[in-house]
Image (cartoon, rainbow, N blue to C red; front, side, top):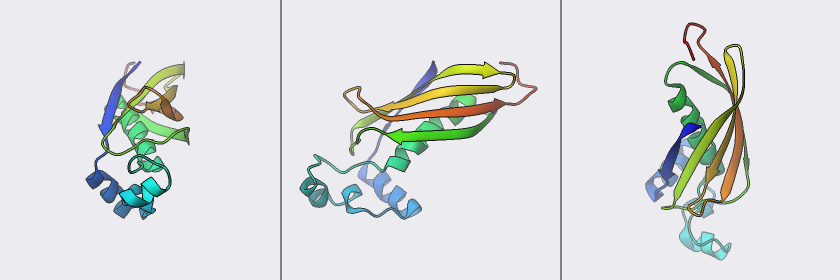
Length: 127
């Protein structure tokens, strides 16, 4: 298993991400709008959750290689001020490459984000 990563997305992080990505959909910053859509709280951007999974992998690699493929699908919503925990595991290795299964869970343990990644290790780095 890859060591998990937990992020609790604050309003500040949502606003920073909206500014960086250009995704200003109101459900990410306007609580009244989000509630009118039936959400209990502001929703975390899907691509921000993908970034958390990418960070999980790059922190685990710790300079021993690089992330070459990252694929993510969204299966549920995550909300502001609630922990989102990213997990991963190596599913296959061949030479200096590895395939990973990735997922993110909401604060109830429900998998809201699924993904896969491929990494290549530096050839001189023992595994």
